[in-house]
Image 1: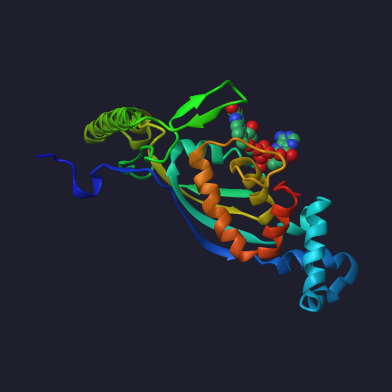
Image 2: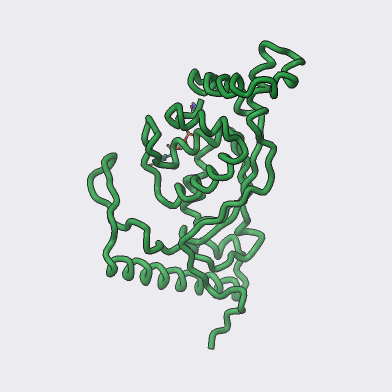
Length: 245
Ligand SMILES: Cc1cc2nc3c(=O)[nH]c(=O)nc-3n(C[C@H](O)[C@H](O)[C@H](O)COP(=O)(O)OP(=O)(O)OC[C@H]3O[C@@H](n4cnc5c(N)ncnc54)[C@H](O)[C@@H]3O)c2cc1C
């Protein structure tokens, strides 16, 4: 019988969580910001008058990379993903605000990443030219068993140190980057487009990127939310090669 309390039972996940918790984001925000250039205070009245013109204006802004009108909106996401995803995520500095759970102020929960059956496991080629191909059943078994064993051992040592009175901020040093963390990330459409251009692979991208699959999974879920909030902006992003303006 284990001494681990029920809420500290290790869990292994292959997915990520992305929830849109707060937003103020609509295509009209883009139009309003763009039209103030020419219509001044009347710009708000102009919005609903001519939908085709609105669509055309958004496409023009995207195509000619007039980026600032895409900044007057806000989306806050709750994200739960492995720490190695957050390390990549937080490289995105411009137009992003982050708050992440603390390993100093709370005991970290034993939730760990293992690759799902559909995760391509084998890397072939050379830097800049990698392709990923399916792993065999044995490779999947080996990877999952190795990860689970290492995670459990690391977490047991974490618990051992906490039980001995060692501070959380010191004990956490043994925990691996496959541990799940959570954060709020707030962005606007322009910074999200830059993120999506780099962190997703898409057939419409004119400047392809080759992101790690796990951050791409986060990006895909953010993209789904954003597409519903700003359909004209989203369509223009795709039409213009998924390059942020
Ligand atoms: C496929 C892939 C592989 C990667 N591999 C590595 C890796 O091996 N090692 C590694 O360290 N990183 C790696 N990165 C991270 C990458 O180098 C960027 O840090 C990350 O993609 C964030 O991009 P960004 O700087 O454009 O975004 P942001 O920080 O959001 O910046 C947005 C834009 O603002 C401008 N800007 C921001 N800061 C500055 C500045 N200081 N000076 C001038 N202009 C600025 C730039 O135009 C920039 O594109 C990788 C990223 C991807 C997508």
